[in-house]
Image 1 (tube, rainbow, N blue to C red):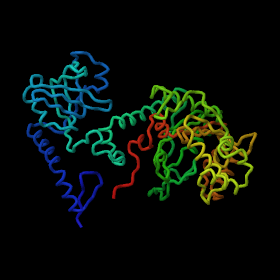
Image 2: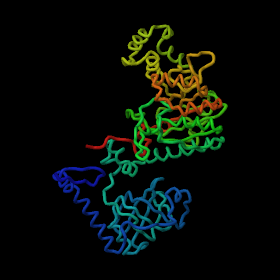
Image 3: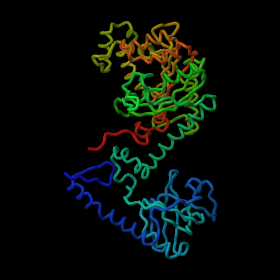
Image 4: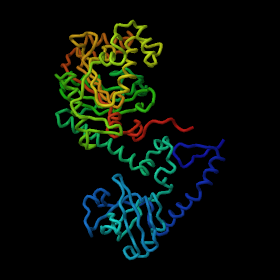
Length: 496
């Protein structure tokens, strides 16, 4: 059977559906194509050329002076045709700016171009600045040029994009019609830049480690698998950069960080995307307490520089320092009762059920406790809290506490109902590290990263390490409800 492609990426349909669709859209599309041809007949390339020295809308506003001559370029997003004069708005990544033209300023021939322009076209213009009678800063055009013709109608402020999934599938359209979406995604870029500036200002060196690895390590997660044809070996997209970064500590680098992409072949939710951005940083001769201070300073610094406040989001999360610390076991007894750790494993399961926490049949005892923690502590925490001294079974790469061998020297920073950052006093004992990894892998020696263990045997300095989910941090600071709102192109199931 013959199939046809609709004018949307990847949409293949039957002939009947194709011709029905084209019939419905033909009037709008044909009109724009007719205008396209009209531009060509005028000898004007409808997909234009460079337009040098054009200012952004922000630059025009910041440097606004009456009667100043400037050039501007952007997407046409509104037209108010008054016959002999036109008011319009162009838009770029910073916002909108009003432009004005009449026959006298442009001349009859160029003024006639307005009849060929559509909402969505990119245009450029030069002229003088003035303030309109309504008090709006405006550019009176003395020249006008088409820079790129839009052949598909742009939805008008969410009309046609009210479907949330459509916003994520057609992010480019979402950014055109939604100032909030555009602002959030630009704020994310600024957050990443300020994170990088923070570490560089404190003497940390940015490094890059492999994204394809022979052994998936550094976290407990399901990896994506790929195959390298030339070497005829399977490789894994990294689930974490930790083991390679620690190799660099062995090699003599004392303060390092990496802003990296990680991949985990697991579920998708409001807080999870299979591909995500993580910061990891390591500091030789530091410990988890020093790393907690560092991450507290990092997040508050970024919040003040990017958001201009320490009270962020619609729920008014208060980032004011200092942030409280509380031991993991104390968090558990506060929500599950003082006798929680005196109960039998069966008793803890029964108590969890009473508390409304669903426990799967395959969970071992420490995982039951952690399920209570995630549902009744983490999920309910709004303001920042450092939860410290977690069970060693949960964090196999952290240093064991010297006073209580059942826990490790770690913090877990939680806020806005989710984990934002873990931090460790790193385990640098190769013998204990092998035991921990063997236990985590169920005794399967073949799953161990032997090269990492060999690196530890050469000697790794005592060190503190942190991880920060950049996407989740962006959610907290911008007030986004879903991780998809802070990702340019979140993963979605292809349309049938």
